[in-house]
Length: 350
Image (tube, one colour):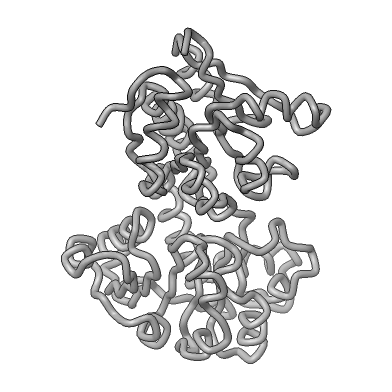
């Protein structure tokens, strides 16, 4: 493959322009920006010739350009997809693997920002900061400061579902800042990993029954879809809070609203919904003890820079014929190596 013939496409934007700057200096990468408002035929002409596609987040991607089997079949020279952050639930991983197409993510790039958001939600809920702000804006009458009696985080128990890049950072912050006891459920890590990440391994039900705060930090997969519902919420302490910055679809929103209406838990902090954004009349928005944010846990200047620069560097690695560091479907590697040499004329490094 000759100079500037490794076609890398993206729609609309990167999370941070640093990626475009980094990739502009690569002699063999032809970086192409596409727009969803352009004629579909024009976009398909570029997509079908792509060797790499940098994806937008799920709710910013438009049909018919979802990373699914139909698109993969139209792109015979496609080598890899890269997602914006850690989540890849919109990608047809099975179709990628069967076609010898790699899928990579930027897992870990958002860990610090998301973890801080988790702690932020815990603080504003337990200290009733948002509730106080809302009430004060209505005027000085009909309330007193004792209506907003709060609780410290210090010494309380945090239960984490998913002790990966984000979960481990949540654990560290909670322990170091507030001396919290951390419980965790994660069936994909070893016992030594729990110890290294400062958490006590417990069963799934124990997270809900024993924790003062439950934080969901696992990916959305077939296994985790609808994993948390009425049964789990009703296990929680009346004084406990439910926090999620993971993905909509893991927790049952209607069941959460029902439990809150019965005053069975203290409140919730929600950064994710299904779909996004949720409608203005969403039942969970009616509760004063529910704090919501528009999927912005990872939207910080530092995080978006990390995600874009990590993605750019990973594309450089891929197009050099090297194994990318954050490969989601390693099962595709044998077929990918054969395809890469056929398409580019260069072998893949072992």
